[in-house]
Amino acid sequence: MKRLAAWIELSQAEVADIDRLRTAHSRLQEEIGAQVNLFSWRDAFARATDAVAGAWRYEVFSVQDQPVRLNTILAGLLLVVFGHRAAHWASALLARTLLRRMAIGRRAAWQTLWFYALFLAELLTASSLFRISLTQFSVVSGALAVGIGFGSQNLISNFISGVILLLERPVNQGDVIEIDGLQVTVERLGARSTIVRTRDNTQMIVPNSRLLEQPVVNWTLSDDIVRRRIAVGVAYESPTRQVAALLQGAVASMETVRKDPVPLVVFADFGENSLLFELYFWVSLAEAFTAENELRHRIAGVFAQERIVMAFPQRDVHLGTTKPLEVMIRRAPAEGAAPENGASL
Picture (cartoon, helix red, strand yellow):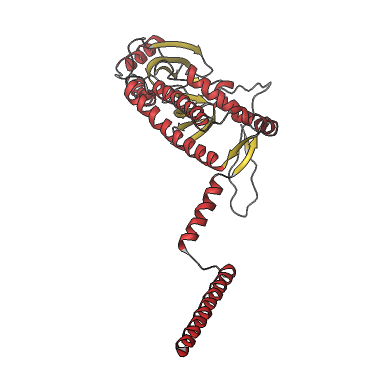
């Protein structure tokens, strides 16, 4: 009995020792866990998510005690870029469907105006969606206006000139205009500049303000019919009425020349070396170059057939003398011989 009691007491002591060891082991694990962080993909992903969310809601600046956060700025920029593309697509679709019967220049002008209107509406919608009041940026814009106002004068002037060109339409897409004596075709009217193409197939960028501030000849504003002139000089002995009839007949046989208005032949003037005639005729601008070339060939042919001489510069030299001129005839000296005196006549 005593031996059993001793075993029980020994067992209880051992159980107590085991409990103390378990408690010490738990404390040791807690101390080690506090000093050593074990890597966990779940914890890392949670920390990264929290960091991204914090950066997304980061307050960049505030205006009038209203915060402007990073997510608002990025979402606004994304919406502006998408709205710019959408405005281009929608304006082109409206021009193709609603204004397909209009002229190319007028349709392009309306398409550009619609693009401006749609893009402006998209900007206002974006500001209201993100609860961005334009007054929030009044302080910032007022400070920037002083700094960039002088540098943006030309930009603003060209933009306003572009809007005026689109509204008044003195120059349309596809028009043939003349700038500084150079004939060009308008390809596109932009917000700041106009792109034109020369006859040499080179492109020029012309600021919009230049088309309003300087004289510009528009050859195709109302129509493409222009008057051309060919000047002809004939010898003084030529029959003037026959020359006029020949010119009239040459232009009358041209199919590209318009019959209304009627071509006109004018005896223009008595020139220094010739009788000056001018032939006026009307033709479309696209056929003017070839028509002039063909008409000159026909005039040269009919004048040669009728023996009408095209005059060229001639000069009569008059010598005023008080006595007969002395003419000397000299022979060429032989090699090595002295020159001989000529005889007087």
